[in-house]
Image 1 (cartoon, helix red, strand yellow):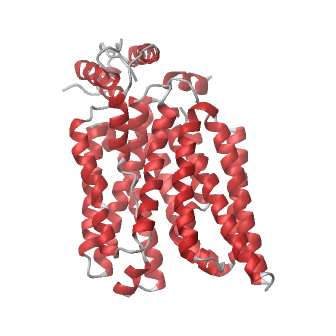
Image 2: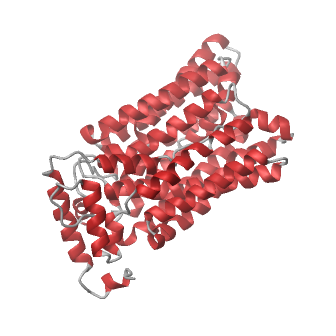
Image 3: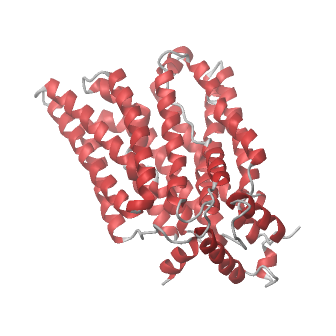
Length: 439
């Protein structure tokens, strides 16, 4: 079996030849009149990993978790995800994208089963940890796989589908979590991974990964299957600071604190938790879908800028509301203002800060360091997510309005980061993006 060493030795599949052939294939794909149904199918199957479940207060009541254990339960998924991020690049590069996704789906399945059968906090946390490992690994390999199989004209929208699936999964879990028990909700978590494992049996491997491994025949078969029988193809197939920076601002901007504690925040603000949660989940799904339709039209950078600015404004509204509440002024108005701020933040986060960093990460890393660079960026993302979710309650105990002023400032800094550092990748092949970065 060939390996990446074949490329380095200068055999028939040298790196230079791969890049030229991939770029040629991208151009040929653009001339095709066919419909990339196989790409849509593969994208859907890969994005089935995008399912999550909210923290359920019923778990803490049944298993009698303390406040510290509650914080651990809320954050341990992200701790497992950090480990998944560390290993995801190596595994995906060594085994291939499809085999890696099968492995990660098994981890998530095992995690949900452990949660369902848990009788103590130990089993609960181990299940959460296993699920976190799978999700952390998925958060790297899914956008990478989708970016590697997508035509340039659809790459942004299809990669964003991963975030759409995550938002949809969270929203469904929030809504059905009201009538269902937490154990039934854990069983429901098995559904997307069952679909994924079956779908992966029909899904072709990434042509770019096969090209890098020197598997010429399988590469052609995979690309032909993805692009359609009538498409004229030969072969098809960035920068670490950008990817890492986007991940830092995405998570330190406060999304995991809001996600885990949204119901409590609405309650503290004097707004109906159920009504607030329903509006929250609706906005998250709808706005993420809107972003997916706009990303290849307006570009990555404009969506990021609008998103960061709106997120900052949303948190300022929340901070002002809690400030008024802390000083006993206009309590009813403060509740409405806080709820409005949270929903403004969620809407603007969902259109840019949520999905776009994953799209850009999948585009800017060159094929020869994609595994290492992707693992680093994903690890940073999950570490920041863990830190925010673990410390959020402590920050709220320190100062409610101070917490949200901090998040507003971080999102404002993210706005400046996007303006000064992040390149626009809309409408460019992966090779053109790399050339632009290098020049």
